[in-house]
Image 1 (cartoon, rainbow, N blue to C red):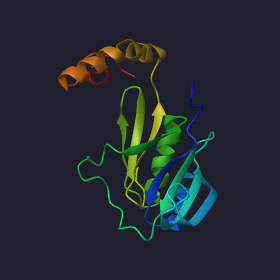
Image 2: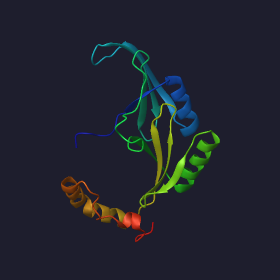
Image 3: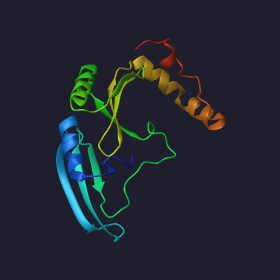
Length: 178
């Protein structure tokens, strides 16, 4: 396989310091690196930036760029707010519920837990408007096997019809409780 792992995922933020402090406070992420330049290394464009990196656990790095000379950031208005998000894994439902309590106590609006059958999630936004999800896996090996067996058929049907295939309707119709 060519790719070994995700090196880092980068998003834009409104304020680098506020972002680092928010992720430290609410998600216990350690601030690991800051890079600042007045010129973009890849394009040589004059565009000052602050690039901050946070430890998202197990070698995963979440990074942000503050770009003060660019127009104010916004989200893609043609994509619903629920679509573009970063999902971060937690180890258990207990951890998920404790994280929700901590976020709510810190003044963050939280949706969920939402039951996705194979995992349960909470959703919230960071100070720059990025939607985040914390997810706790709860799928059984049997569930995962059933999903694996139909993934290609589902993709093929979707590509032809653009309508939701029903191969895994059991995930939301209650016929296979988690």
